[in-house]
Length: 84
Image (tube, rainbow, N blue to C red; front, side, top):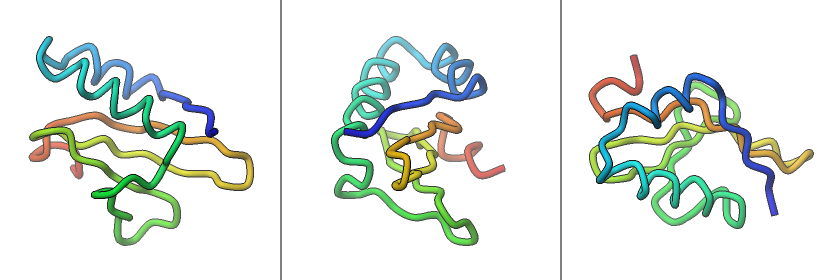
């Protein structure tokens, strides 16, 4: 099991989500504790440890630290805004 650490900016992003999307995003984040590289996850180009998963039109960007078993959630934003 991995420990999930949600950055302050990601917490703010989660609060801004609609009531339809928020529970799905939280469920996806909790599932990362068991499997930080689920089917459909992608490694982001140009970074060493950044990954992303899709939740509808939203993306969850996170880092994996395998040696200390931590998944750090960085951003939860709409797909048009997440990479800016």
